[in-house]
Each structure stands twice: as structure tokens, then as C-alpha cells.
Length: 476
Image 1 (cartoon, helix red, strand yellow):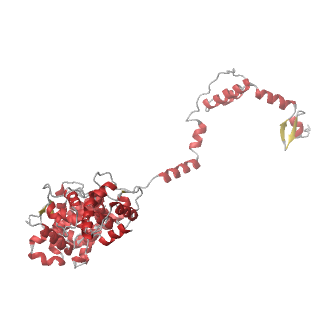
Image 2 (cartoon, helix red, strand yellow):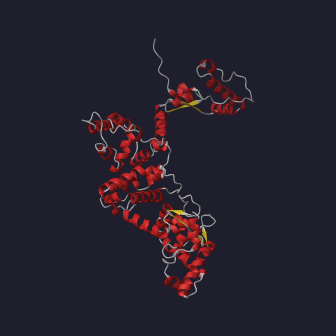
Image 3 (cartoon, helix red, strand yellow):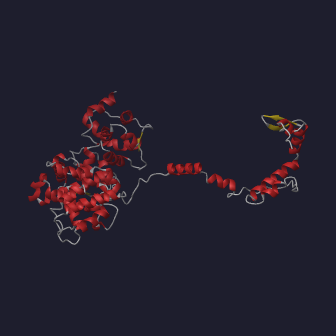
């Protein structure tokens, strides 16, 4: 039985269709009827209903529903249900390998690396092992522990602290006062208080150990053991050994200078943040390298102490280490006005440590003198700004300047025999500082220039302001 020849694509499609590229294409009346059928409202509703059925029964009877696209009753008011979050189509998208990798990259990119560790940086296993080996080498051959003198390489070489911290660290580890520190005792103390911390944090925790009751700040007494070691051991202070009363005053001065420069809040509570922002740890380490203590200008210079002490001694007639406003008026041959002296005695520049009302103690005088001698530092500028800012609004206004300058004005006219007008001085101060708002001087305005020293001196310091300069202002 012979086979009939294969039909062409034209014959397969029929008389109402044409073949294009081997496929059937509907043309003519059939296409028009099909398009009209699709445009009917009932047809659209039936198609939407069937699609909803497919989604709701993804795992069900697809074959039985495929033939019923025209057999379901048409409901014009049909409301389609919301798309299921666990539909097969959505699930396939979530499990796509490409989408997974993209989401992992997004999470990895949006994760911020931790940068703040209040309890110290985590220690890697390698660093921990290295520290253990180093500790074993330091204590090798000392089964009974190290004495305070033998403990010095541990303090300087391993803990990276100044040698003047040696006694403080040794006593902190040797809590029972045995006189020796064993390897296990030091390892436990080091792991808890030093291993994860930088030098400033180690020093803070060392000074803030059991004696401070776990407080998060340092007081002046916290520095006493450390400063006493400097007084006792530094070669530049060896001559003071026969003068214990001056050793105490020197230590008192050093602590006052530390709190003046480091404790920016002036609340007698020196925080770790303040200690980190200062150069105290570096200066302390400099004492190990420099035998001439006068070359270490910050905090520890004996020459600075000598000048401060002598100036206070000249003002303190009864030598009770307290002075009043009348005593302070004699400073620098009556250089300061009475109004600014009164503001200083009221504690406007910085609260007094001395609690006797109307009396300035030696430590308060240290703050006053350092602020008066050097007005270029932000600390001294803050000090004098607060003294001039009577209403405490953060702005030195023209009326406040006039109040303080009135006394200075009278003294200048008496000395020079020339009339000095405040308006001329105020104009020059505006040209000098260039404030954002004329006649209103803020701390930012004063600090942004290098004219803070003449600005303050013109207002209240007679000896440091040039009379010829003021006369020149008046004449021009």
C-alpha cells in the first residue's frame, strides 16, 4: 500500500490560512472572527476567571480546567483574590540562584563593620597566643614571681606604659601585698584590664582600679600614686628629696595642670574620652627619655611650677594658701580691672576647687594664671569668654564689652591724657575679629582669628595693651 505524498504547509493550514516560514498564520475572516470573540466582555471575564483558577490550583487538575475555558459561567462582578505570597511562580523566583547571590551581595554591602568596642577590641587567637608566649618568657626562671624592680620590663616593654606606672601596675596586680607578682596573677589581670585596650585606656583603667570603686572617671587623687613616682624617681627632681613640702606643692601643681588641660568639662571628673583626646600618655612616656624635666613643658616642668608658686606666694600675705579679691587685684601690678577680677572670683571662668566662699585656692590660681599668661589656647579663650559673657547666652554683646571696658577706658585716659572713645574701640574690635554679626562676638568668631590675645587684653588688661595703639585708634 503506497503512501500518499507529504502535504505541504499550505495544505496543512487549509484554505483560510497561509504558511509563513513553515508555520500557519490565520488571515482573513477567521482572524476577524477571533478578534471579535476576544473583544467580548464575557470572554475577558471568563479568561480572568480561568487564570485565577490556574493560580489557586497550581498543583491540581490542569487538564480538566484547560477544556473549560468557555464552560464556566461568566460573573461580571467577579473580584479576583490577592496573589498568594507562596505561589509557585513567586517561589521559583526566590529560589533562583542568581537572585540569591544578588541578595547576599546586597546584605554584605549594607552591613556596617563594627567600629566601637566599649569593652575593647576583640583579640585574635594569634595575638592571644603571642601574648601568652611573651608572658611566659618574661616570667621564665621566676617560679615564685617577680619583684617590683624585676617587674619593670613587663610594664615598659610588654604593657607599653611609662616606667613611672611600674609601681602602680605592680600594686594593682599584687593586691594582697605579698611583694611578688606571679605569672598567673599577671596574666589574669592583663587579660581583664589591658589586653584589649590601647595605652590611654590601659592607663585610665589602671588609675581607675579598685581604689575608685569602679567609677568611670578620674579625680585628682587618682593621679597621686603616679605623680608621687615621678617626684620620687625622676632624675630632674632629685634635688627636691630634701624638701618634702615642695614635693607636695609640685605634685599639687602637676595635678592642677593636668585637670586644667585635660578635663575640658571642668567638672573634676576626668573621663576616658578626655584622656584619649589629650597628650598626657605621650608626655608621660617622654619622662623616660628626658632627664631634664624642664624640657617637658606640658604638665611636669619644674620651672613652670616655680613661677606659679612664687607669684601665688607674693599675693598670699598670710600664707594660708587662699587669696581674696583684694589680693588678686595686686596681680601684675594691678593690671586687671576690678570688674574682671570679680568675675574670676565668682568662678565665672571656671568653677573653683576651693570651697571657701570668696576665696581662691592655690589650684584655682594655677588655672587663672595659665589662662592669663597664654590666651592663644582654646581653654584660656573659653575661660575669658565666660568671664565676659555676663548673661551666659554664648555671645559677647556690645553692652557687655562696654561694661568691662569702662574701667579700662578711664585708666587709659588717665595714663595717656587722651580721650578714648568706646565706639572707636568697638569698631576696631569688629575689624579685628570680623564677627558674623557686627558687635556680637561668639567663641567661634574669636577662635577663627589669631587676635584673641589683643581682643581680651584691650578689654581688661592694662599692662598688656599698647597705649600708643589705643591712641592711634582714637586719632584715626
